[in-house]
Image (cartoon, helix red, strand yellow):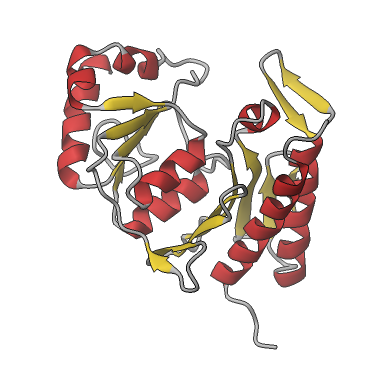
Length: 257
């Protein structure tokens, strides 16, 4: 058998995690508290184990950082794994969550939606959507919906820009705000279901954001920090379907910085 490409490893790993999450959705699950407002479930843990099994079998020399089991191995190539992005939604039987796998050093990533059986993947150059269609379809960003997901989770030490923006009359006159799971929202920007996504904080090497950022960038979205500089060089994230939408959001965010 030919050696799998990195993109194929990411696809297989995300699909393995999604199979677990899909199977366990709606069942009674133990919770493991992380904070007063956050927790993991048995599904998070089992999904991550399934993902790690795929990565370790295909790339035994690579390192991995997982949301639940932490870091293993030391290597220039490090996979970032979020086995269930949107755990609180999952536990509340709200179908807004995803499974994320990324290899940032190559731009490779995969984002799986367990309940729709859709999987968005990138080889670092282009982004494709795998779903009910017998062939993968190229991701096509579009701002036509005018829907913008605004992350309202407040990272420690921030002024919670998301809440400010959702109360900004100019923003509300131009866009309709939505709230979803982090990477699912970014995936929707890449395939035209959302016009943009906005989040606070320092997101470098985050298991929650790496895969979503990668698929957006490879799909041709405009992705920067809050000041329009390359993402991770300054605070926050704006991922927009096109340059015009991105510029409009930069202008709206600027007064809140």
